[in-house]
Image (cartoon, rainbow over all chains, first blue to last red; front, side, top):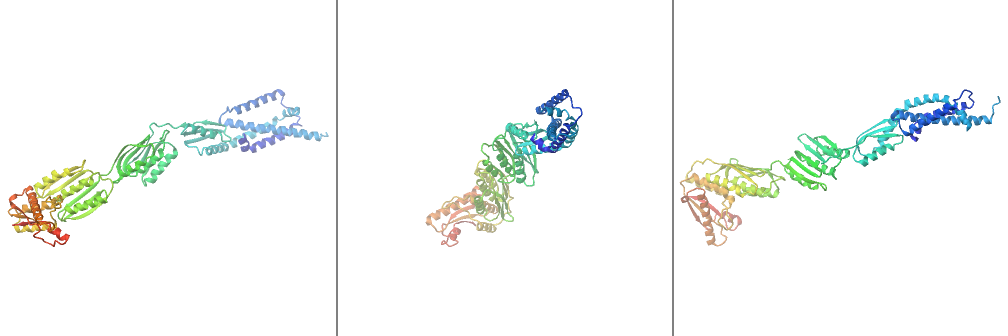
Length: 98
Length: 464
C-alpha cells in the first residue's frame, strides 16, 4: 500500500482534488442525488471489490488495476468528504444572504 | 454525520472523471511499475545463489523461476522476493537442481582442447573451474559441458582445482572425480610428469582418495652409439640425476679405453628403477662390440652391433641379461664382424703394442682376477691374435716394485696365466701362448711415483 501511494502520489492527489471539488459542489447542488437503495447497492459493490482486492483473487495486471482503482476511489471519497464538510463549515459561518 | 450521508448522494458525478483518470493512470503506469518491481526483485536476489534465474512481472505479481541448490536457499529466495515492497503475489516456479549420485566431474584433454564435463555444485565453482582451466592452460580451448547438481563431496572445488593443475601436465588424458574417488589416465607431456602428478595428488583435500592413477609417461630413453670410424662413444638421452650421470661417465671412460666419450646426457625424473644397475653392464657389453648401438627405452635394453669374434658374440648374448635388475628385458641383435685380413708377425706385434698403449688389462688389486672392464680391450687383443694365426705369443706379466719380490713374481705369473686362459677360452689354441711372469724386474718407468708404478703394472704381448 505504501509502495502504491508513493508510486502513484500524482494520481492520488488528482483524485483527492477532484473529490474536494465534487464535495464542495455537492453541498449546494440542487440536482437529484442517488436514491438510498442505489447508494446501498453501490456501497455493497465497493465492499465486494475491496474484499476481492484483499483476497488477491484477480491475478496479474487486472488485479493491479483493481488495486489502483480502489485506492484512487478511496482518495476521491476522502476528498469529497473533506470538501463537503469544508463547504458546510464555510456556509455556517457566512449564511447566504439570498 | 447526517449531512455527510445527504451530501454523499450527490458525489457520483465526480466518479465519471475519476474513471477517466483511472484509465489513464492504468494505461501509463503499468509498464513502469512492472519494470520497477522487476529491478527491485532482481536486486533483492543479488546475494542468493541461483542458476537460470528468470523474473517476470505482471501487474504486481512476480513469477520467479530459477534453479536453486538447497531447500533453504529456495525458501529464502522466495521470501526475499515476497519482501520486496509493492509485490503482491509471488508465483514460485523455482526448481531444486537434481542430486547427482554418484557425483561425477571430469576434465578431458586432447590435443587442442580441454573439455570439462559432469557435475559442478554451484555456478560460482563452475565459473572458478572454467577460469582456472583457461588461466592454467594458456592457449588451449576450454569447453564447458558441466551441469549443476547437488551432492558434491566436501572440498570438491579444491580437489577439482588441483586436478585441473595436473591436466596441464598431460598431453592427453582424463581426470575424473566420482564422489570422493579420483581417477586419472592418459599420457604425461614430459618425462617426470607422471612423478610430478603423483606427488601433487598427495595434496588432495581430506576425504579424497586416488582410485586409479594410470598416467603413462613418454619412454625414458638412453642411447649409446659406438662409432669405430670417428672412434667416439656418443651418449644421448636421460639419466636420473647427477650421481648416476657421473657413475655412467666414469664407467664409460674405463671401458671405452680408446674412444672419446661425447656426453649429451640430460638429467630428468621418471627413470625406471634399477636404471644404473642395467645401463652400466649394458655399456660394458657395448664396449665389447666393434660397432654398436645401445638403446634403453624404459626397462627394455636393446643392443645391436658387431662382436669381434664368434665366442664374444655368444658371451655377450648369454651374459648380459643375468646382470640386470629384476623386471628389465634384454634384446640382443649381435652379429660378428667379418674377420680382418691376416697379417704377418711384425704387424701383429705392432697392433698389440698400439692396443696396449691405449689401454691396459686391469686386475683386481693384488689378485689375478681380470677386471670385467677390460673385456673390450681383451676382445680386440683376441681379434688381433686371430689375424696372425701362425705367430707364437708370449704373454708377459709385470708388476711394480712395491711389496716382496717373490709375491710380485708369483702375481705377475698368475696374471699372465689368467690372460692366457682368457684367450684360450675365447677359442685360440693354447699352444700359441706362453705366459711368463717377470715380477718387477723390467720396469718401464720409475717406481718412485704412483704414475710410474701404474705404468709398470702391465701385461705385454710379445710376438716370438
